[in-house]
Image (cartoon, rainbow, N blue to C red; front, side, top):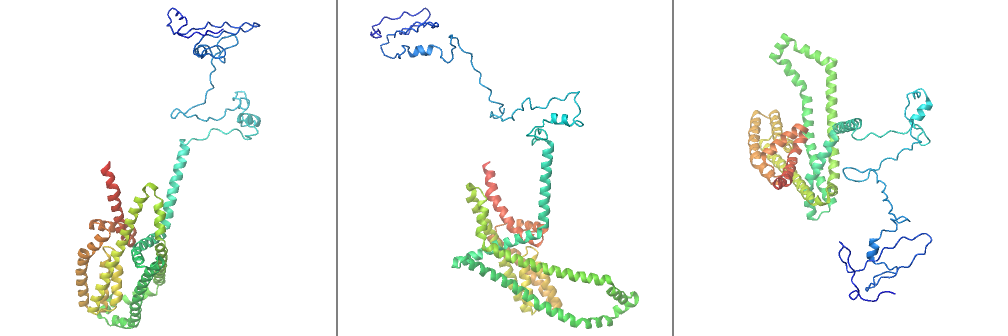
Length: 486
């Protein structure tokens, strides 16, 4: 029978010597069961709390007794089983490394024996040492070359150098096409402010682009038409005046005396009748024709590209803005819009300066009654688009034509007028217009124009100032704030 007395009323267990009293009775250890004997049922201990399980053992008993799975049938503890190694691990990260499966000993190639035949002469020995089987009919492959192998590194570096060289060659061969694309983009960005103003008035973008492009076409057509009449008249006049010029040369006393002394006419006749002179004259004429055809083709190509770029400029901007990370896309878009606005302002400022130069030249040449005043004023307007030297080129052309078609007084008047006008333009008109549009210091403008002209000629001089404006904006808004934070 189980003891029904409470824990408090029951007899206290006397603690063993050297062991503290726990207030609970410790059951006697169960002797191991002998083979063939009946397993006596243990009497339940009188635990008042009723925590004993069906077997009569308390949780303390279970914790003190060894696990059945860890004990042998005889009661002895089983030895610990050692887990299998998990494989090689990376010493830096501790992650397992997948090593190739080991080749079975039966499939491994036998070690080379000194008495074995040479595989260079014996086919069977060759197959045995190479480990030929149904999976590898030509032998097992060796370990692959690592990236740090000198051969792999050198081969990769050589491929990189060859690729870079080919890209440079391709860019140099396509230099003319790249220049046309850059000029067309430049013109499209420069004409975009005019398109945006027409859109604010109420024009659709297609109609605004067509209007602006039509104005540009009319300007170029008027410029070419203004040059056709003077050139045609001068060629006709020269053809009619050739006999008169020859007669004047023959009646010239100085030239006649030089002819008697040095034989100039005979030498000139021989030089003109020589095949080399005729071939060189033919080559010169052919070269001039090729240059004219090439210039016309490039002009038409640039105008067509400008039309396409101007009509799809919002999509082009959106495409390039999406190349930036999403976290920085807003700032990149704001900086990009500011750069495009400055380029457009620069183009508008250059057209303003060219318009002022052309109108002023036309008024002056009309007052002076110089021939071909309209054509000369258009030449001045076009050359004024070139920074630094454009106004000087136009002034030289006008002064030369005024001298050839007029008198020395016309030449002196043109020289004085353009010297004064250039000073006014350089120190009054140009700084105010460019300061308001591109916000670039005059020294930076001069240096950028010189560098651009040295790199790409006239096109480089045209693109240098807006490029300098974009770089100065990026330095001021990106580089300098980072220097203040670091």
